[in-house]
Length: 133
Image (cartoon, rainbow, N blue to C red; front, side):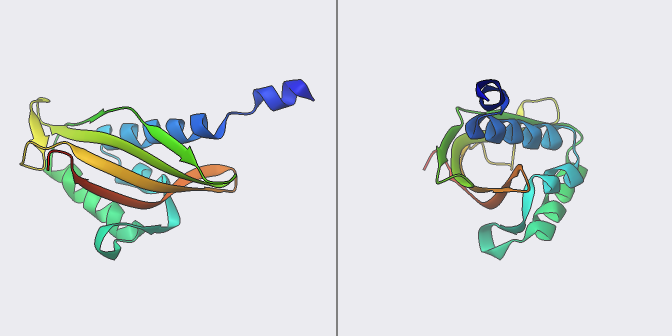
C-alpha cells in the first residue's frame, strides 16, 4: 500500500506538468493543444470562454512563425483535493527570440485557477496583468 501511495504523482507536480504542457503547446503553435489544457468551464478576461481562448491563441500563432515562452517560478497553492491556484510571471517571444509579444516589452503576472476533473488538472480561470506596473 505504501508503494502505491508513493507512485502517485503529487498534485503540485501534476499541475506543474500541465503548465509545461501549455508552454509546449504555445511553443509548438498548437491552439488545439492549448485548448486541451483549458477546462470546459474555462473563463478568462472579459468573459473569454474556452473557444475564444483557442481562437485568440490561433490568431497569435498565425501572426508569429516562432513563439517562445519564458516563465519564472511557478507557485502552486492547493485548495482542497481538486482545486488550486497557480501564480507565475511570463513573457512571450516571437520571431528570432528577441521580440516580445505583444509589441510592448512587458513581462506578465499570471494567475490561474485549476480544477482536477477525471484525473486531469485543467485551467478554469486565467488573468494576466503587466508585471512592470
